[in-house]
Length: 74
Image 1 (cartoon, helix red, strand yellow):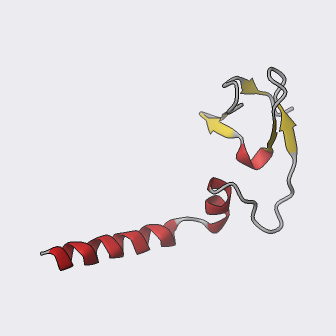
Image 2: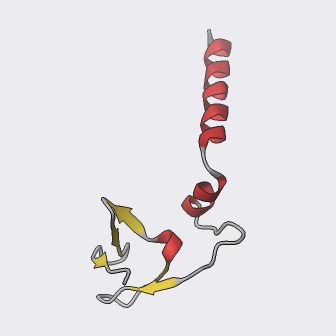
């Protein structure tokens, strides 16, 4: 029973790894994929600077992960 469970977990993990887009995975891990232009945005409230690829998005709005305020991308 343990071997079957182990094999199923390994299969699921391999499937999950295959479905993740490499660019998205790089962004999640805090790295930038090759060819990505790194632009920085400064939060008006706290002054913290973030690469645009690492901004926190929720419902189409971007938030500063330091002070949790909305950032305008204009």
